[in-house]
Length: 295
Image (cartoon, rainbow, N blue to C red):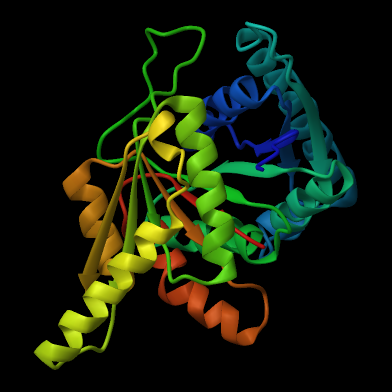
């Protein structure tokens, strides 16, 4: 059973992090979870490593940034405090990924929700330097939100702006994917959403082998579906052949999926390579939020 008791949402006040806040707020509402909003003020020497600042000037700038961040967080919380969800806020000083992970550990976060800036130029660097590091090292699931090709945020619905209707889960039948399935079914129940289970076959060439592999994968997918799932959601199983990240992105576009869920294998060298080849590329190149699940 999925329990989401505490949600951490780092914000940098960009449109991407404000969008992520909407998702975090909605999830907190559905799961009756505590919502913590965090802003990280990085040392000037980290933000601008090639410049030299007098100690007094650096202190003044740092203090002003921190004070401004506190006011902006207060405003954000005040304007989004409705329907029983009472977010709290915290300003941390340090390097962003480390500060986010530290607060997540201290607060025993069940979920981290954060925005990503996209996939081009400096945005790619931003993804690699913050969101990617958090996903690789976090001990809880991370929802990475970037500007989607279609939006399921509805500003006209004040009590819950998120309309989560279609969930795509890609599984390789590992224990990591089993955990991801738990989240997919739980979210489907909360949001009355449809779920598509996808398995991607890679490296199957002969037609006979392909037929057998496709049939076996389809039976395995169908076996994953809880027997009572039809009581709360529609579930569809699909098998495709190709590169996993390409098929995931393509199917998400075809189905107009609102959320992709993936199991992340871990944090050692091999797992990081696997992360880079699938989860990272889906986040970087795809068109909807991605929920990365750690075991």
